[in-house]
Length: 153
Image 1 (cartoon, rainbow, N blue to C red):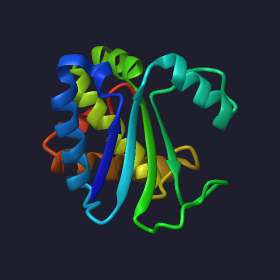
Image 2: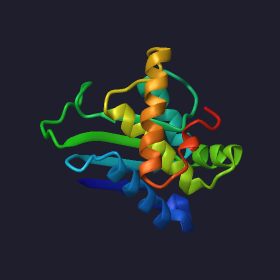
Image 3: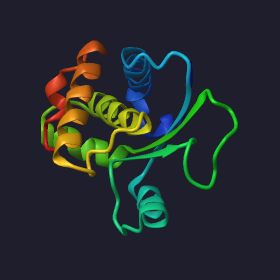
Image 4: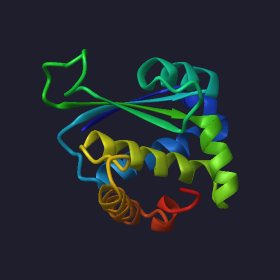
């Protein structure tokens, strides 16, 4: 498993703890034979990405870019894709949910990973429920409060 994390400086003092949480989520998800990129950005960058790829002119908390679909298909079967997380959205959501930003980065990493694995909560109520259950299991295995997957969502 290889995890490339860019933009850690945006988390300042929390960067090392966030990296530990990201790695813990990957281990808990049992994604040991894949490579994934995680990029931490500000809302302005996230809004531009969301506008370009989802045609939604607003920021969001996490975007998942699978290497197995779309116009940039990569030949390496190990590379699952990229996650982009807005640290500003993570901070807002952490405050609203009553936990710290590091926990929220873990929740968003988990959410994005589950999307990369093929689940999509926007498809149906059943898929939404299934995705939440999977996320709660991963968060629990990673040592994070599984209820964090439900908070404010």
